[in-house]
Length: 219
Image (cartoon, rainbow, N blue to C red):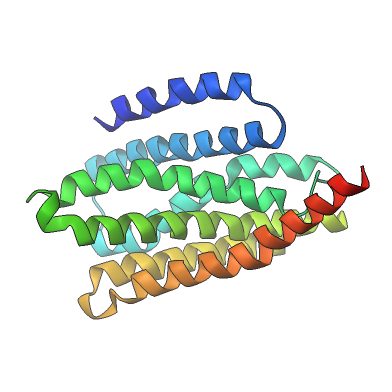
């Protein structure tokens, strides 16, 4: 079923990409990669469940976070071939779009499996899960995007910086997943992603908009 939802969403987005240009087109393209990366992770998980069958806690708290964060940030590496970006923090916003796109299909898949008693009995869980997963995936991919943005702004390449941000995003993602498996830690699954999102929104998005606005006025 998730494959049908993916195709049904991808085709309209394809036509939207054709009719818009500039930064908006790039945002939709990266958002579309987020949807696509969900499908890739979905089939990899099927393979793991079928042929490897690891411990469930190990799979959810360690293997999946590393795999998801690794697949999500792959298209951001194309920026490392360019000398400079068009506006400050635009790479971070593209990364955020990837993560949010990923969360949409993941939430659909997860919620259709876990909410079997109807929406009225599961509404709070649906809202909480959708909110936290969305900001978690967006914020974690944005961390890696920030590392790439810094390298592009100052025109240097640092694999330790990139690897460090990837490890940090995977670790926070792991804590989020682990909190969902531990009843006493579930409140962390709400606090951590929401806090990170608002911090990133202030530091990256607002500052980036100010710089873009200033550039437009100068033109």
